[in-house]
Image (tube, rainbow, N blue to C red; front, side):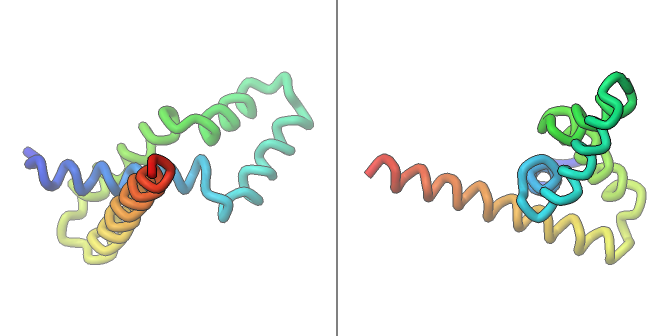
Amino acid sequence: MIGIPELVFLALAGYRLTQLGVHDSILDPARDRVYDWQTRRPESSVRAFVVTLISCVYCLGWWLNGAVLAAWLLWPDNRLVQVGVMWFAVAGAAVLLNRWDDSRKADA
């Protein structure tokens, strides 16, 4: 079973991956391509599903967090998995701290 610290660590990694997939500007070109692909056949349920998936933090987050958890549990001794998940976890914590800091400046 996963302990609370490890769960928080994995949640931070999943949070960062979800933000990257849904909101970060670095992936705007890829998302724009998918949106353009969908507009060429708007009646396609597969295309509508893909657009919904990449634009919904809950939908994409569910799958990405599942992938993070699976990688962490299935390959616990894989250094690449460890470093990758740690990288996203640290980035997730940094984003949350930055948002907290920014919200404090707005209150002042």
